[in-house]
Length: 119
Image (cartoon, rainbow, N blue to C red; front, side):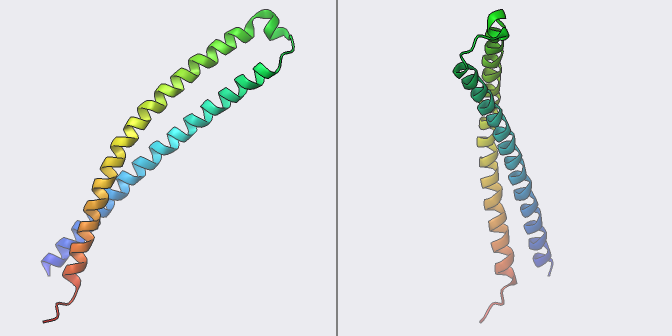
């Protein structure tokens, strides 16, 4: 009976490890999505400003040039953060695959042990 309990505990631990790894992976994916949405918004703002050719106070004073420089700096920063998170996501995906495999093996071992052995 202790073997069955040990296998059940192992299965529970492996399931928790898998769930924790998948949660971390999901959180990184959400952060990447938020950053990409900000990149898209900035690019849309830049495109809108480029389409609007009217001479206004911002263009006349040169503030639009400063704003464009700021948006380019911000885009570079966002892209760097996205790249770092993508690298993290690759590593987390590898860990999640490993923990999922371990959880599957633990489940199979527990299930096989619980099956009646017909002889």
